[in-house]
Amino acid sequence: MTKSKVLVLDAGQRSALAVVRSLGRHVELTVFTADADEAALAGESRYSHQYLICPSAENQPDLFVEWLEQTQLKYQFDLVLPVTEITSQLILLNQTRLNHIPTPFPQYEQVMQLADKSRLVKLAESLGLNCPASQHFQNLSELDRSKVSYPCVLKPFQSRLFRDNKWINTVVGIVRNSNELDTYLTKNTYLNFSGFMLQKFIPGHGAGIFCLYNQGKAVTFFAHKRLREKPPQGGVSVLSESQAVDQNLREFAEKILNAVAWHGVAMVEFRIDTQGKAYLMEINTRFWGSLQLSIDSGLDFPWLLTAQSLNLTHSVPTHYKIGQRLRWLLGDLDSLYLFFKSSSSNTAKWKRLLQFLTPDLFHTKHEVNRLSDFGPAICEFKRYIHAFFGK
Image: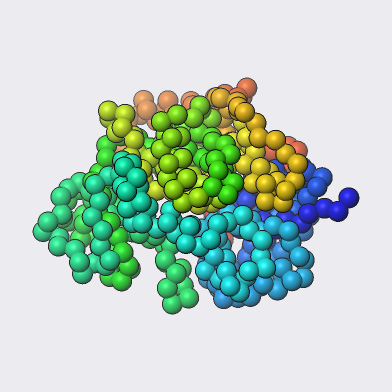
């Protein structure tokens, strides 16, 4: 049997590890991994056939594109899967040069309709969908600070800017007064030449819908809730639980994804206000951080995406397990440490410690630590200790 060869980029990411563990179990596939470090999380998985060291897509974008071009000519991969925004954008930005790279993306223009937050808001509003009230600015010179209403959210058009052959990380800021606004603008000087929005702050909580599309048609949806995050007040999920898809959010997500004839995966993020009204916040056009949870719950997005891309025989589950939990152990440890450093009461701190020490063993799986594939856990622990001691 001739196997299809798949290259998973960004092997240091936990989402890449989830992809590799998913695809490596299928005999039809041979999985390669790549990243810029000597060793990487997904590269240490037993499901990685070969780990390739590449130039840094963030720090050496030209060399990375050249490496990818030459590596594809050498290995003839049937599918290349980037899992970060930087590698995804680099491939899309160099589509003419890398047109022989098979990726599960639509065209660059379709991607930017969603990835550019200003264009996304305008599209959603044209469809009659709820978004926070937004003002759009091409750069800081257009902003009249005396007319800003607080609190508000200052949101750059793009999460990552590629300028002068360099990547710039942008930051979404919640500002409550003019002093906080001045501080934010002083720190984020890229707003002098790049676009941003001022949006009305929506009190409430976040929610998300995870989607798979095939040439403009919806394939399946998944949802989860975050139980603990790092930092504790809001950030990366360290403990999450699968839940049923909210049909209103699904319809919301479908309307906007259908409008751009989407293809591939996407994460649609919402803000739910105190009255239960949903507002569109942004759409990530790549795999998400807690990808392993959907796989553990019975909805294997990496396999479904790969199978539809390579025309492999597959079936799409009609349901998945509700209440399945996923824990990133070292991230949860960091979250606990940060919580104990906070101004929370001693009672709250001891309660949080008890929660950490008494996980729900019957419904919880570890994201990285798996006895059947323990290499990534060793790799992560070594890096954690190295970072902790600063050596």
